[in-house]
Image (cartoon, rainbow, N blue to C red; front, side, top):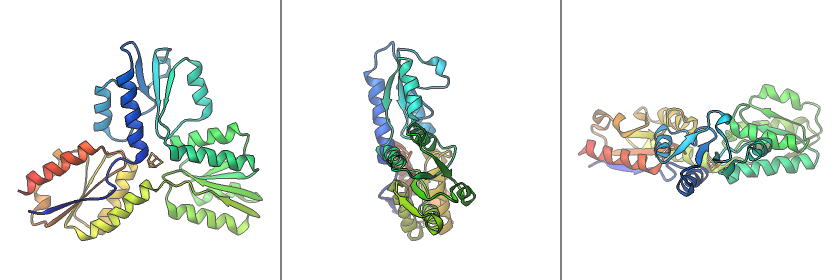
Length: 286
Ligand code: F3S
């Protein structure tokens, strides 16, 4: 029978696993008259979101839904401190599932701001994590800019003291280029590398595994950016790469004649889906 090799870092990262556990505890602990709501989908995986909804977790669609009987789960991306105060002023109970690696970005920004640096946050302007981090910069009375492309560096020209941090899931290569460019003209540059290694670990697994297997299966939400990126890398190394969300999407013909089958999953894919995919592949290759 063909061998199935599951990548070392397949599936949930530390921060997502923690957020799910906190949400599950909140739903379990809560009394019948309380609502437990998450600020946006807790993770980018529709099947896991549905499972949590089945346990009572609701999506906060409109803040008029909130009252003193509400428990709000802050996602791993975090929120601006101003938003946190606003929610608390409504009398809601907050469960803070902000990933500690995201909190480290907040702390880095506050430190740079207090030391008088103009802050460059390398990241995506509309990403909830970046919006949350900018709230901390604003709170501290600091100045800064989000750099999403090299074009955005225009705002940094002429600044003497520049402090650079990154969104946790930022591409390492782009971060390096931005730092290198600023170092050419700023008088002083302080860099705090806040990239979390969960993304690069998952990508490195694919670089290693995809070329040595006959078929590569990538499991994760079609709406999950980090899963799509794993698929793109895999496809560039092995044309027999497939991105699926559920075991039902697997096709017997993909595995015909295959001796080695590789499998990985994005940081928002739960273990139970990974296991169901492994079980289904075993049925198909008998
Ligand atoms: Fe946290 Fe990194 Fe995951 S920042 S949520 S451990 S991708």
